[in-house]
Length: 375
Ligand SMILES: Cc1ncc(COP(=O)(O)O)c(C=O)c1O
Image 1: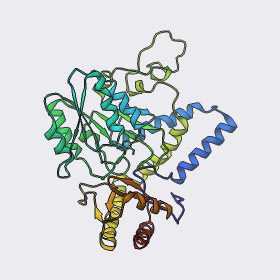
Image 2: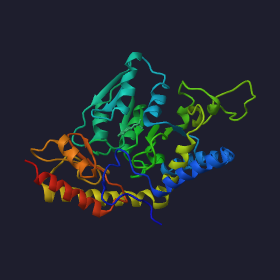
Image 3: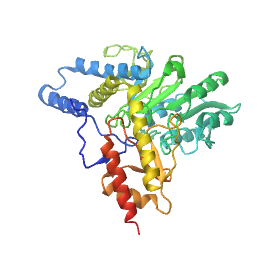
Image 4: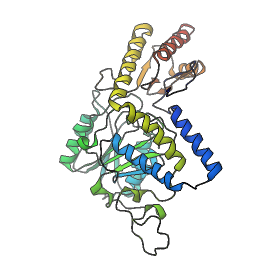
């Protein structure tokens, strides 16, 4: 069975922004809409099973056998905010982030300045995210928050090295995995991050609005709660009970009615990823990224701004062309149906595992035509 239905005249190279949905995800949404129209919430118990399946699927993606550390949030930003405002900060605590991080993973930490917590932006040296953060850590560093893959350059972080350091120094490690989850392995039992967050609409190929919030078991009860409701209690569904306590697992971070529509969609997308296997997906993305780098350098004399070594890069190729402004070039590419982004001082292409090579050729041909017509 065919998994995608993208128009063939579109070269869709924007999975680092928002992904198209697989056919089965579209079907899941349509069926859920029909079910609601015809039967309302008659089968709510089944919906709850789907919601729980999403937790199981996230656990599988992270290499975990249990779901007790997994909560569902609305977005990466919301998940990060739950963490940032849950930690019991001390005056002069310091947070390290990379300079050039996506705003979600910067603004939430910088907002803690009102609590006398300082957020330091660390310049990444020599394409080594982990070492740059390790070198910048000091006695007041309480938490490091890093993207598994930098959104503009595609530079990957060695999370195992960073986590080993953080554990030795008793520093909390928060990973924004939105630019790699579903595309590259995330072996949490090996990495041992304290927090992992990721929305579903990029490499997980699901709609916006439903995200992973992973919190390590021993930290779950240490985070102060700021949102309350029927869904976050231990005795969910026992509406007559007058006393309550927060759930002992990570569902304590989910205050009210779940995003059931989002859960049906996300579960369908995750099922495709798990069926194919992340190891295979990452190889397929790597081949496409190599193909693009080669074509951009050979046929167009582009400067590749992303790291070129396979162990340093992910699914992102950002490039510039001497004498060509990226903003008008981006607009011309979008008009030519090469769907991409203007990021990090260049054009960002981000193919997924299923992107046909013919789409890559189409993008290169259209880019060439635009450059050749450039005055
Ligand atoms: C690294 C990173 N974090 C977070 C987000 C999105 O955050 P949210 O899920 O809150 O919209 C993006 C989107 O581009 C991103 O690249």
